[in-house]
Image 1 (cartoon, rainbow, N blue to C red):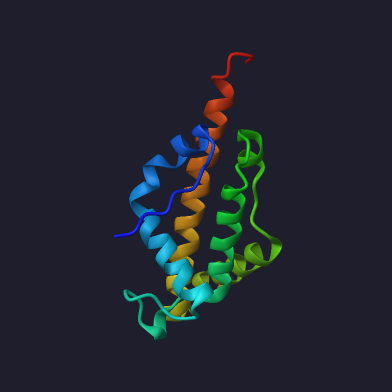
Image 2 (cartoon, rainbow, N blue to C red; image 1 turned 120 degrees about the vertical axis):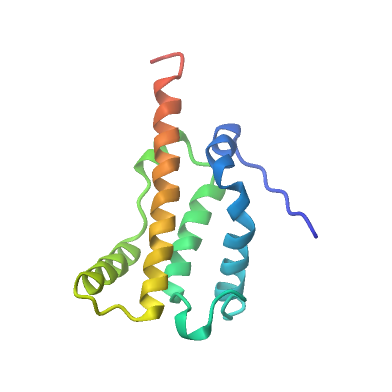
Length: 133
C-alpha cells in the first residue's frame, strides 16, 4: 500500500487524530466520485450520494489543507450551496420522501457535521488552554 504524506500544523494533527482510521475511506470516496466520476466499491450506483455531497467534502478538505488556525476552525462554515442542499434533504426526511440515494447523502452530511463539530470543540479547548487565556 502506498503512503501519501501532507504537512499540517501539530494542533490540527491532534484534532484529526481520532478520525485517522476514516481517512482512507474518505479519500477513496472523494477520488472515485469527484475525480473519476465513479461510485465507490461499497456503494451501489442507485444509492450513491450526489456530487454536491462530495463538493462539500472537497470544501472541508481544502479548508483543512489550508492549515487553519483554531479561530478559523471555530468560525468555519460550509458554503451556502452545501447548507441549502442539507436543508432540502432534512425537509425531505421530515416528509419521509427521501430516496435511498438521498438517505445515503444525508448520512454523509451527518458524518461531516460530526467531524466539524469535533474539530471545533478541540479548537475551542485549545484556545481556552492557551497560556494567554
